[in-house]
Image 1 (cartoon, helix red, strand yellow):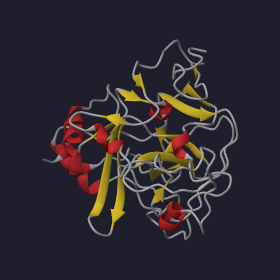
Image 2 (spheres, rainbow, N blue to C red):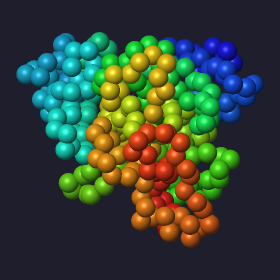
Image 3 (spheres, rainbow, N blue to C red):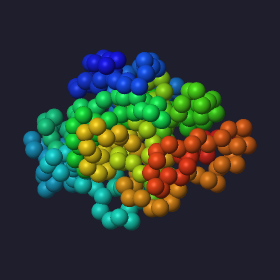
Length: 292
């Protein structure tokens, strides 16, 4: 064991690090449980944006939060927002916030409680470092948040152009469908600051789904939930494309139309090593970050 707890006590549950293949250690980074403000991003992004409820026990017929946004979790804290298999975008998830007087045990407070599961960082054979659970995870249960620096699209473009095969890519651009403004993007970079989620590898057939969850801000928290039942020791993975659908469409997740943009800058898309039957062959990338 290389470390008993890579979070250095930041998490409620320790996150050990093991390497059974070599003496290599993870590169150093600043540990943070949730997103912090990156360059030119004001900390006010964490401010509450709607009035809280006045419930002792939040129920749909009495809680203003649940009445306004609907119940998103069941009694065990598992997501219950996915209905039809044709759904590409999930419904918005809003949790009770710091203005609410309901207790911490409220069933509408899940992501804000942080990581509750026992997770372990480990060295994989072909994909660098990875993350796996040390316990069984139930389908739709919250696993962890993808935390890092919240950055602007301008900063995301700058950092993307600076990426090399040595630096790795920890920048995630989550896309949400908005009827009023098209596609909303949230950019989080976990290269310099992040949590255990920064070690999760991409898969074209992932066992996690990334869902935007809003608590005290209109800026969503990038929450990772189990897309299926997950065994203890099974490597965790999610789709780096930032699309949050749990059903495979059979379509490649790589923006092939953007390949020429990438190659025009002298860069090649990185090969995907997920090994799934529907593997696209390349890691997803957002071609819009390569154009001015």
